Image (cartoon, rainbow, N blue to C red; front, side, top):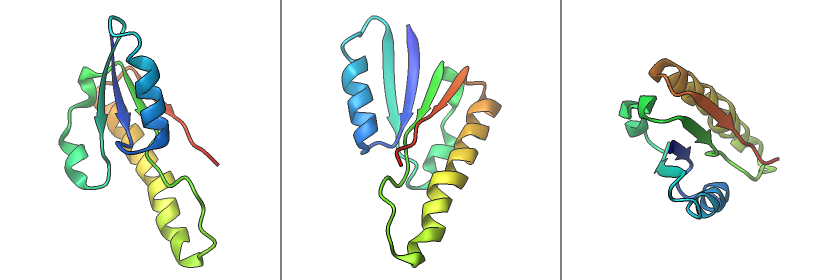
Amino acid sequence: MKNILITGTNSYSRNSLSSWLTRYPDDYSIDTISLRDNAWKAKDFSYYDVVFHVAGIAHVSSDPNMEEEYYRVNRDLTIETAEKAKRDGAEQFIFMTVL
């Protein structure tokens, strides 16, 4: 059985992936985690074979004031999550983005 952690608790991608994986309960165990606050940093990722990162801002705003937030979430948070997965010993990190 593969233990999978999916980021982006309320995302469309998380919901779709979870729905598909739950069809194979003998093959996959799924947990989800929100990255909206810093509580996720205390979670031990070493339990997971796969960290599937889909948390992010999916729709680009034309508001130039949103640009910094967009990059903070979609670039910086992704890097931070990947580094934690590696440090904790997760076997695989998958990053999926929607443009």
